[in-house]
Length: 282
Length: 282
Image 1 (cartoon, helix red, strand yellow):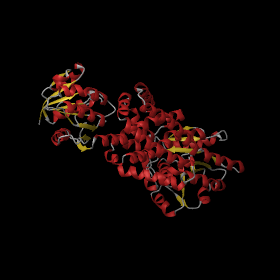
Image 2 (cartoon, helix red, strand yellow):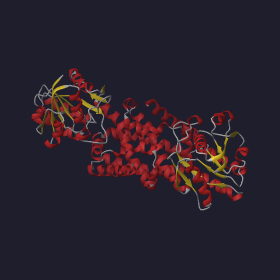
Image 3 (cartoon, helix red, strand yellow):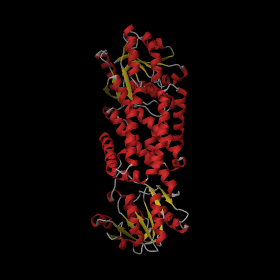
Image 4 (cartoon, chains in turn brown, purple):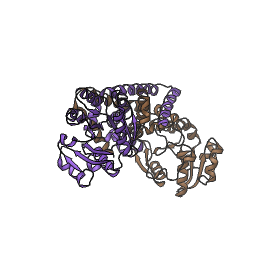
């Protein structure tokens, strides 16, 4: 059992974590840290938090586990202050959707002073944000990717794994660089493509949107996501995003040549290959 | 009321049409035409058809309405025989998902002999095919695009509109070329992109598919579609598909430059524009 769980950022993810940890009796005390005391008050009121503070040092003091549940760019900017405020007893993890830069920064800080950090990426969320959207079951059956490196003590991985499994998630491990390639492939690239698809289809034939049916709605659903968050994610994982985009463009160019030409069998075969990959996933 | 409704091709669409027309008492007699008598027998058995034949001339004889419910390339190849077999009393329509080539071919035939044709595209279907997948409610609340030209008598449009509305569909009109651009934008391009996305993501990081969550599944759902059908559609609507692809590539290149660069505001603005278009659709 965790004695004191500190959650920095009590929005959708942090708030859902607080609610789930409370409901499952995972921590004796849950402390929320935020910039805006008024925003923390509803989590205090409904009992998800025991204490709330706008002071990072006060919030982290004596915590055995701290979770940074703020936007991914904020995590990077906040890490030096977190490393300075966290005691030796505090194991810090996060919820950022890219991992290599964060883990690299954490390990650089750990070279100068004791700082225990293990990266986490809970693959859960929704188009909504803020504590009002937080749900006690947000992490149930969700996958959380934990990203230890050769420098991470196994004990630290165990604690972080226990936290996520304790609220019903499934934990898998990847090294930070592979994690970033995986999320580029299955999340960042698809979002980029969906944004471009909405724009491209509209430029080509604006009147078409009045006829949009299920297929187009499915394919472009993720394009309704938050622009600030996605700008941060695309820039934060720029290298893997651009590399995956290169592979996508290559595949698209092959398809385009097959549509241009009269190679009926070649086009069918290419499509059948993509269909087989998609069906193996489902 | 239709005296004799002929349905050429009793698969998913033709079979659903037969069931719906029967259930709603839309036609006194429903005749099915197919290549394979055995395949027609289940539609006869369950009462969706009154008669079945493998002979096109016999099937069309005396029909006041005939619906060509075969794959889009087959429609084009079949049109001369249909024009030869159809009487002056027969109004012919189809279910093809591209329209310009079919309507052009029909009007060329009509220049030589009496041949009444109006193109239709019911935007209904599923990943499944064949009479076994046919459903009495497939067309309910579906949109059917009917594509008359300046040469089409209003009376013919009225009959075809009555047929689709009679089985619960909503009818909208577009000229054949605009229709083909609209379906390129909202259906053909998204399929092409989904096929390329599955292939590109897999080439970039094959291990990523083990982590695929809701967003990726949504975005690539249509990539599980039938390769033979989609090869025919892409080649059949080649011009509009390639032109829409050009617009998509342009949008993608803009996004790529914004991700490569450090223009935070520009990237947010671009994404916000796409999000707004997507939300206006929903």
